[in-house]
Amino acid sequence: MSVKEEREKKIFMSAAEEMYEELRHWRTEHPKASFDEIADRITPPRRALMGQLISQLAHQHGDGEVLEGVRCERCGEEMAYKGKPERGVEHREGEGKLKRAYYYCAQCKTGFFPLDEQLQVGEHSWSPGTVKQMVKLGVEIPSYRRAAVNYTELTQVGVSKSKLADLVKEYGGKVVAVQEAEAEAMVKPPAKDEVVTEREMPQPDSEVMAVSMDGAMVNIRGEGWKEVKTVTISAVEREPNAETGEPEVHLTRHSYRSGLWEAKTFAHHQWAEGYRRGLERATQIVSVNDGAAWIWAIVLMCWAPCVQILDWWHVVEKLWAAAAVIGDHDPLLTARWMKTHKAHLWSSQLRPILHAIRLACPRGQPLPEPVRVAVSYLFHHRHRMHYQAFRLAGYPIGSGTVESACKLVMQERMKQAGMRWSRDGAQAMLALRSILLSERWDEVWPSLTPSSNLS
Image 1 (cartoon, rainbow, N blue to C red):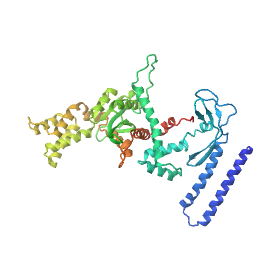
Image 2: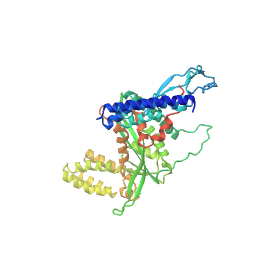
Image 3: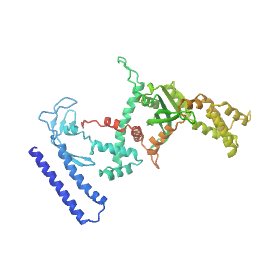
Image 4: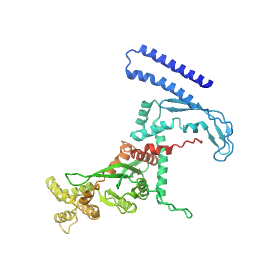
């Protein structure tokens, strides 16, 4: 052990002994202190001591000063040595103080801290791992203020509401940029002299994969209520049911992509997510959605051929509205009519339903609006309503996964009382929640924190 290391060890051990004696003295004066009171009393001096240790260990291999000149990565010229400014870096274990060599390129007006790059501390006053935890909490808890307070209480590392919002916007913006590049790559034609190579297709999670899309509204400052479009991609797992004879269907391993996009742009994004999940190599693709025309246009453009299924509950909802009119809003008549024709729908018999509607509505008179809507719905989506065959094949017939995704990804975090979002802030939040809820947080985060520290 070097003389310097021996000196640092003595300093640390002396500080540790002093802390120990102070805490023992405090405990003597507080004989009725609870376990939590004892632990809370230890935390501040413990963090101060650990901050001291972090500082010592961070400098164990030097402060970044080099004997030979440092050259600028941009222009290649030798950078000027500018001393050793100090910075603090906070971690839940304590705040480390770093005195590190600084080099500056006058031509490019850029600076470089070799020790910062070596330690990968980034540009914030918190360590990258601390920032990761802060941002994750800000994305999960539906209030920046509560997230900041909770993080400070849990870790003793302070962060303000506004700073947490800035961090979410910063790192979410990086995810947005990655997503935009992925979406653009799906449709960008090759350059004139570009050598085109076959893409490596990822393997899907199951032979049958499901893709569903939907939209929900969020309040954007200066724009009002705007639609957030979401895609959910899931593996389809099936197991036999001895009682019904039909396979039991379970959708698992969901992933999401969500954003404030027009339908054309959203088409590229959901296609990119589908490619990442290996849909193009699936034995069968199933798409279950409501009746929105923009959704089915995307399905036909990106995923044909696939099994197209109209969400069961949307059809039932339309039939209930028609049944109420046909039954003259009598609950018993409405329920009786609905019971009969819901059974027809379940067995994929649309003719008896349409025939019953025709008998109930006089010819030569306009159909009541709920009835007209139901008839139009049944007619235009008739090829997507073979529910009996879908069930026997082990396909899902409900779009609950994407409806839940709209609540989970967007509404749960972004539609609390009085919330309004900037467009950039909303898009950043949606991007981060998409990767978080797709269980890709640890996979994606390293790509958002480059180790270099040029400033």
